[in-house]
Length: 292
Ligand code: HSE
Image 1 (cartoon, protein in one colour):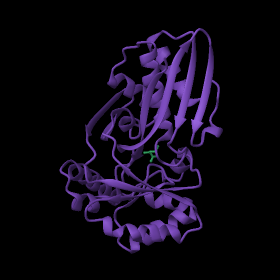
Image 2 (cartoon, protein in one colour):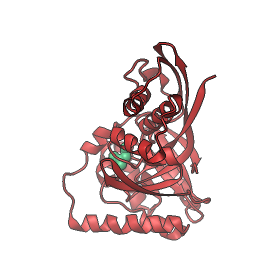
Image 3 (spheres, protein in one colour):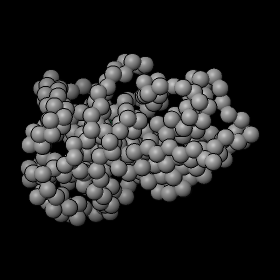
Image 4 (tube, protein in one colour):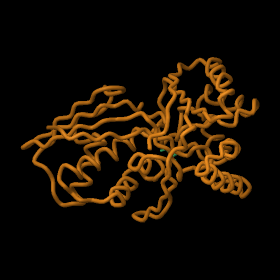
């Protein structure tokens, strides 16, 4: 029988929490794994499956290998079936899902006995930053930061009344390209702007104070730079600011946009949908809830 692992999509940053906050969503990739005597068989099924590798370069397999190296034990061979629902290179944590899925599956397969913290450290090492992999592994909203090999985190549930109206464009944006668009330095004023809002956002989410959540979402560290990467993104981002649509954020490194649905922002969703329609992009719009 094949062993199954399910991993959620994640929305990193959540506005001001660049590289330190993320939220797990109810959209999942599934891995099925079984040990073979030898060889490597990979089946990619589902969304964007065609572009995924079928050899040891597959990110799931590289992540499994990381566990085999850490534990010092590996199976003779592997049969892996990857069923993807998380769109690739769109800012919804598809690589984090592959990494976390591979680590968890490998750990189960060889009874590696790595604990959550050890799995998290390997995931951060592979991904380079913790904000997607932490909620992919732990669910909920996770605030995380630390040094290599020493990641601290606090996890709490996604508030019941928070959903995301997620708009996924029919265009990919690699995380590395989206990181290259960021400046080497930011002003003291912008840093202070974000520290305050990121701290406020965490406290507001924990207390389910949606009025403050909405006000705390403004960001000056990544969204103003990344929105310029695509004309459609720039149009929606600029217009949303003009129209006072504070609950609109770029999901992760983009290009997916998310309008946060909370009790007091539901009225604004049509404005967001109208802005999407003003662009030449094709948008797939999903209403997603938290995965706790
Ligand atoms: N914090 C990361 C970024 C998330 O914004 O680049 C995407 O992997």
